[in-house]
Image 1 (cartoon, rainbow, N blue to C red):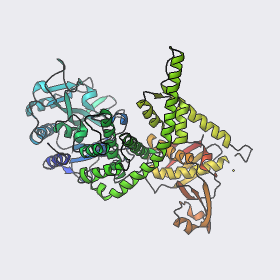
Image 2: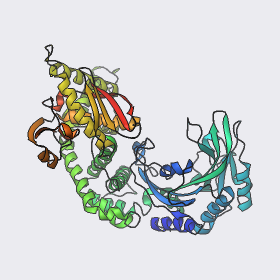
Image 3: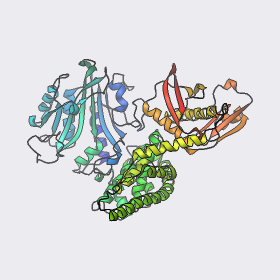
Image 4: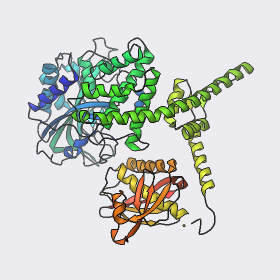
Length: 607
């Protein structure tokens, strides 16, 4: 048996002995440079150096164990192999060693350190195509180190090639993937790593960046890189002879705790097993995100929304197990104190803060869940009663299997149930949700609110439109600071007409589509909250002491007006403004562009 701590240490020691610098892990939270919300791969933070920039350490051999978060397949969590947080063990050569050293080291690691039988190890290499040749060099090196020829498989580009899609001028090349058979019973004459029968376990891969992609094909690179990635969670399970990743020491203490609290057996109860996996996985990821060096908190926008969804799913499945949700604090403590205390010491430093924030979210959702679940149950009962009645009346009647969009919107509008929660609950009852109908109901609600809130009357309709847009600029300013995690962002100019707002702010790069969507969502959360916009008159020094944001200080007199928008914004301004954020209806970014060097411009409208 090998523990997770031993596996991490073995990886780092092996490569440090071969001249690699352990660069440690970076934040789980994306920095915006790659257009993704979280770090989803070990090499993500090293992309500039793989693309040619010198590493700040001056070293060309690097290694680490990097935490990653992927939530695109969150619905798959509950099976034996899917996790939203996982760790990638990596090592890199930046123009240093290449295929000969790397194939030997990977083989030695698997056989001499982890004790795998070299006669059973299998490997896949690039089969070649019209644009790039067959990777016979790697295949030859694999045979030289002891891989049996019949265990070397040539696979197409989609299996054994790495490149940045849709780009030119960037490094790319074939990869060499390592596999090991679970058993010696082939599914057929062509059984191999690509057949998907489950016989072969993928252990890791070595990417050889030896080409540069051009408009006409691929040219050889003079400086070649190696990018290695081995999944710690997957390898840990395999080395311990497990097919269920939740039975490793990364989860076992939590699963045992949930069994004790619920009185249910993980092994003997399929429904309980799924719920325990979801609670264990989501609480691990939530603990990591809150305790990260750039830690986030649950919210209704961006990464905070993903965190909120993870926590609320964990809360729901904890209740399903019959466990008091206060137990989630203990689950988090197990991860902090017993499992990740050595690898992520910052978690230990932030332990009480992490637990406090988790329990705040538990309290918030508990109140929503109790009332909302009653309404959801009524909805389900209504469908069941109708189906039963109509089936008795008409044997040819086709039972309803869908919750209407209006019903789903009521759960959202009145009880705070996001659409995906209603969809999950419905699926458990064998039902679906009319998502298109939900969207239509949402649109109708917006239009109705707009019609009821519009003040009609010539010029007065116009002090009203501009007042709403003026309030929107304050929310936009605050949203940019929050989403981009940059308190130095400030207004550099603005212009408001009766049709749109224009807002200039200091920032060095174009915002990603994901960031713009998060900014929109942040502002619309404040609008949906319908908080009061209050005005206070005070001295400039008092305004600064109160935390008010101010720009163009040379324009301020002895006294200033400070507009406060709930918890969202406090800013010095001359006005005019809306009385409540709900008057803004809906905020939409129409365009984002450069205004001047180091200054970006956003144009937005209120729908």
